[in-house]
Image: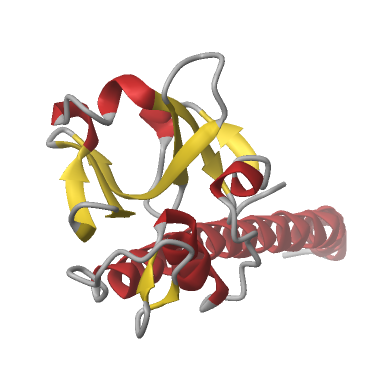
Length: 183
């Protein structure tokens, strides 16, 4: 190999090397962006998972009071619960402040469509479109088996009912409110 051939090969090598350095930096930037996106997706997923877990914990906690007696203005399992005393007691255990009145609770949080109700959401009832809220219950589940609620009734205490199969409660549904994700 003569000197000219060697210099030509050396120049070509240096030229390719010069081209590859910015490409490496660009590749590093792309990889960093992909890693950031994966972290963001994990964080978002983790946030959704933790919210779902909180909802499961709230429902599990609420279910432990099944069978507790009804008491007008009752706010503890020791004395018994009325409907809003029950939902308030459960939510306060998870640092979610709620009023002691179902009418006031019906103004807290944000409204969600019934078909999108999640465990831990509150469902409110009125006797007619012109009467005020008179009852509140908590969503236990919303799936193909129905919408199950847990609530304190004046005849049965704390019970779980399938809302859409209950001829008394179903026609009185007024609204559902999410008091956990208020943003």
